[in-house]
Amino acid sequence: MSSATAVRNIDPTAVDAFEERLVHALNESGMLLMLSIGHRTGLLAAMDGAPPVSTTELAHRTGLQERYVREWLGAMVAARVVIMDPGRGTYELPPEHAALITDNGAANLAVYAQFLPMAGQVEDELLRCFRDGGGVPYDRYPRFHEIMAEDSGQTVLSALLDHILPLAPELPDRLESGIRVLDAGCGRGLALMMMAERYPASDFTGYDLSHEAVDWATRRAADKGLGNVRFQVRDLSDFDRTAAPGRFDLITTFDAIHDQAKPLAVLTGIRRSLADDGIYLAQDIHAASAHHENVDHPMGAFLYAVSVTHCMTVSLAQGGEGLGTMWGREKALEYMQAAGFSRVEVHQLEHDIQNDYFICRP
Image 1 (tube, rainbow, N blue to C red):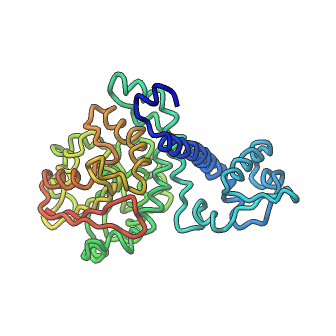
Image 2: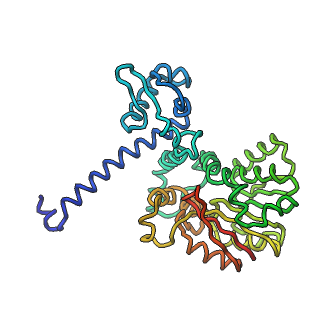
Image 3: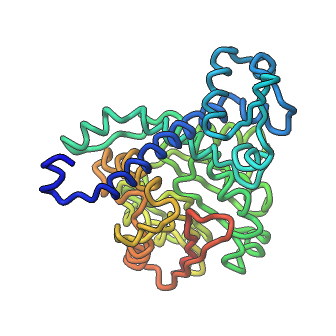
């Protein structure tokens, strides 16, 4: 033990334990990066349910370069994701693993691995922000809406009609009869289009800051022949002043408030836009507002990392508040009350450990 270690009273057992944890984390992060590549290239999908395959066969099946496929498989074997038969020189993705990292399972966790390479693309800009302030703008994340659409497909779309909307028991019947609906921060609009298809008597509007997301959603809605849904590029920073009073019967936001430049202004605008008997349904991150209360959060470190590398910084880039991903239930309830909602219910759904669901009424 060095003299510096002795003076600082460092517990060598704790050092060894933390070192072991860091080495494990480095290996796991390597696995996550390779899962992202496997998801995007179709390698994981090609191995799902398939018999053991050679590197050449897998490369041919996916149309990829064999040398890259071979090295990727090496990473997957080292990570114990893929099993190799060294005698035959073949590789197999066990069905128990495929159930969690391909689209044929209940949830494809490889989708979330994509956040890591996306965040890594802006690391140098984030370092500048740590020194000088400000933030990294949305346009530096070209794949953000694509990834979020995949995320939404698992947490929102899979449960929207049968579990999320019925959190307000009267909503399905009202949607069936025909009401006016807004999704604020709609992204690519998948949730809105699902509702528009299911409830043709209702009228649906989506607002989002991203031209790319709105253009994509508009094209997709046209392809689907949905005449009861429209999308509009709109900055909601002044929504508290510009929202049309009483215009909508239902307003939804799906993981969209915490990264707004002015979240209270958005919530106040939502309250202003609701009819007297309207409902605001919000999905947002399940967390506590105090750091120490998130120590046992099952995804706490990951979600704080997403906050630093995206949600907080895109808000600060607009001169905003920078609430961050982990703003927490306490802060959310505080803001909803300040926005003018008199009744707020908080729900959790079994399929979604990441989010809370708020039913807010005037």
